Amino acid sequence: MKAISGPRASRTPWLRALPGPDPRSSSRSTRTRGSPVAAARAPVSSREALSTSTSSNGGASRWARIAATARSTVAAPSRAEITTLTTGAAGTVEGSAGAGGTSSAAGTRGSLRDGRGVRTACAAAVARAARGPAPTTATIDVMAPVTTSLGDPHARRRAFEDAFLSPAAARTWPADRDAEEPDCPLRTPLQRDRDRIVHCKAFRRLKHKTQVFLAPEGDHYRTRLTHTLEVTGIGRTVARALELNEDLVEAISLGHDLGHAPFGHIGEEALDACLAPHGRHFRHWEHSVRLVTQLEDAPSAVREAGGRGLNLCADVVDGIAGHSGRAPMPRTLEGRIVRVVDRIAYLNHDIDDAIRAGVLTERDLPGGPIGVLGTTASRRIDRLVQDLVATSRQVGDIRQGDEAGAAMDELRSWMFEHVYLAPDARTEHRRVHELVRTLFEHHLEADRAADGDRAGEGAGALTLPLAGEDGGWDRYQVHAVPAADADPLERATDWVAGMTDRYALRAFGELVIPRAHAR
Ligand SMILES: Nc1nc2c(ncn2[C@H]2C[C@H](O)[C@@H](COP(=O)(O)OP(=O)(O)OP(=O)(O)O)O2)c(=O)[nH]1
Image (cartoon, rainbow, N blue to C red):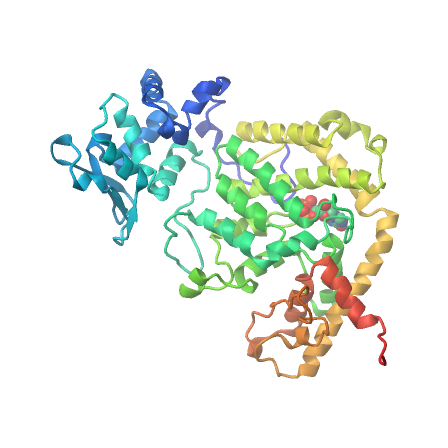
């Protein structure tokens, strides 16, 4: 079996915990019954079928497990008897019964309370109570936990993770953040991280950052943003198939490339070259971490908790830090998924873009790997994903099979030779180096000139005439380091790395293109 390059991951005894494909998945109707949400919405007759199928599995089915989990946290005598639901401090849900099993006047006001006593209207409970006593059937015991937990997303998600995720999956709780924050009542900590990433400025800038083709004019070329979305989609598929934590994979994927400099890898290389004489380096994955932990504006909840940056969960930061084949291996299986699917995504979309750009034709592609993986991007992705899932399931870690893994490596080497580092591309690379060096040195010089006058916004950013001059061009707020501690190299790096391709081009133009000084 082939692991993606990097330190060899420890083998997790995970397979034993993972069942084979669910036999119910062959039938669409029974599969629908397997979903907690679908089951909660299903008519009583379907629930009876569910109850039957649960018991006919001798209590070993997933449904029996989730019902048992939920039953242990919910006292729910029957739907008809529930008048109020109260979530306790520990997030458990308790049902309180109306006298004599009938719904009383009070019973028409179903409500939820969290541990701090915050009261939330629960429309479903209200509607149920208003309808009056419902028939008590054998299914009620199974359904009640699902029904009652609908009002408490955290209890429902915990029950889901206990029942449906592999024991080797990363768990959503406890949320390990630098600054401790109270949970959001609706979103889980990982959903919240996902939202924080999508709402941050660095995420929006990905739409104007190169994937491979510099500052592309064509509407159909990939950018770092569309690459990020493709990685997220493929990553979720793999995580779901392996019963790992999809929410974690999603958050890592969405954040993994936030730290890319303008002009993709070439910009990264150019910034690295600027820092090398000072004994420093630039790596995009480390800069992604710097962005989410320090540079991005803290959301209000983070500020209130005394934190900085996006204050993401530690597993998300770890996955971002370890997504590149050149970085240390992430500690979670979810992080390792992103590390492999990043390559699956970029190799295949880069072939597509290279053909679109006229750099390649399909006939040029190397016969060996294409023979193994398939002749179209969708077939290749499908083959690589199926292989990754099957092999990982078998060995208990995130691994590719020997044949598919070797074919992908060969294709990647071929792409380096014929696309990424091809002679035509190298000409542009020299120009990018020149541009990045000019901007970097301009910032250092401006910082020196500002000579300690650094209160408020970054002095370097103010020296560029374009900054903040018109509505279309934002000034980047990149200097999170307090003025007194400002490190000029770090400030220049943050400033250049934060640029989009077009901002960098325009900034460079402002600095080097002579302007008329008379009208
Ligand atoms: N790795 C790398 N990618 C390049 C280079 N030039 C262009 N690219 C393109 C190919 C892919 O579309 C994309 C890879 O960017 P990523 O940020 O996903 O690379 P990362 O270091 O995470 O990938 P890796 O694990 O090293 O394959 O950049 C280069 O010199 N090195």
